[in-house]
Amino acid sequence: MIGIAIYLLFFLVGLFSLVVCLLSGQFPDWTTAFQLPIACGLAGGFGGVLYCLRGLYLNYSVKKQWSSEWYPWYVIRPLVSILTGGVSFLFLKAGLLVLEAQTEVTSSNFGFYAPAFIAGLNVDKFISKIEDLAQATWGIEKSRASKDSK
Image 1 (cartoon, rainbow, N blue to C red):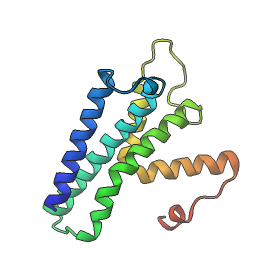
Image 2: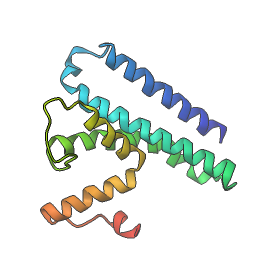
Image 3: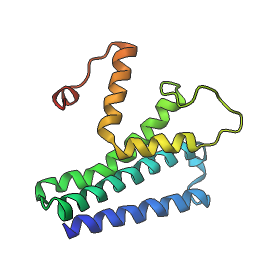
Image 4: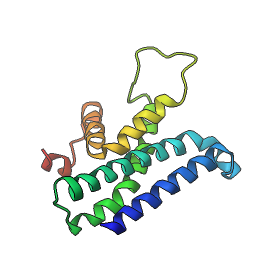
């Protein structure tokens, strides 16, 4: 359990470091065009780490049901959260996910960061919503994993 907690804290420090590098312009020049999707991925990563830390606290301290069988989940979940944060950017940018009824000229990138964080925080629900969207838009059936989880 201590190893997982240390891993998550190092992951969190790594995310903060990447945000500082991104904001201070220390990323390579070729990444300039990709700053918003990168930031969305990082926001998703923060959501994923927060979810894992909460799970660690609940399962170890509150419910007293800690199991080493979940180690891979704690290791992989923050990485998957980064990916879902980035994917949320794609769906927002493509207009497949709509956040507000009106578009304002003064809108900021926070409209991208918040859904990315939520996508990282709750990967399962985000993927389910994307599958719902794909089914309604293109008639693509849900994956077996989504069907089995209901």
